[in-house]
Image 1 (cartoon, rainbow, N blue to C red):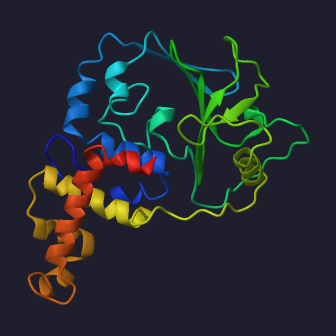
Image 2: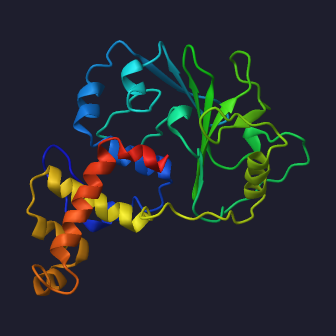
Length: 269
C-alpha cells in the first residue's frame, strides 16, 4: 500500500481489505486525503484516553470535542497511517445514511427472550466512545458486519445490560418496535440480511480503485498501475486501443479513487 510516497505493489495486502464493511472502506479512502493528514497534526489539544473493560470491550474517552475531525465526518481522527484493519473509526451520525453494514451472513447468532436487545449479548468486538457534548456511542464489529449505536445511558460507568437505539441515518434514532431494529434483531438471530452493495462499490471495485489511487499518489505510471490491477500480460496486449481499453479503465479507476478520497468516501456511509 501507499505509505510515505512509496507504493507497495503486493496485491495480497489490498486483498486483505475485501471483508471490510463500508464504514471501514470509508476510512481507507479518507485516511489518504492530504487535508486529513495535515489536520491530524493539528489535533494536539484533543486527548484520547483508551482503556479496556474486564469484559474485553474497549473504552475511548475524549477530553473535548474534536471540531477538526468533525469537518471530515468523524468524532476524532485516528492515526491516518493506520488501516481500518487496525483502527475503529467513529463516524458522525449526521454523515451516515446507514450505520449498520452487513455484507455476509453472520457466523454466529444471538439468542434472547428479552424485550430489548442487549449490547453485551451481540456477538462481536465492542468499542465505546465518550465525547463531551455528544451521546455515548458503541461500535460492534464482527466478520461480515459492523454497527454503530447511540447508547441510552445516563452516566458512566456503563451498566452491564444497557439498552440502545440503532442509528439508521441523520436524525433517525429509533425505538425497539421500529422496523430497522427488528431487522437488526433478525440479523443477530443468524438470518441472512438482504443486502446489496452500493452501485459500483462492490469490494473488488473499491479495492481496484484504491490500488489505482495509491499508485497515482505515489506518481507511478498508469500503465504500471493497470498491470498490477489487471495483469501485466493482459495490459500489454490491450493498452492503447484494444477492445477492453485498459488505458481508459485505469483512468476511470484513478478518477474514482481520487473522488472517494476527496470527501466522496461519505457516500459509503
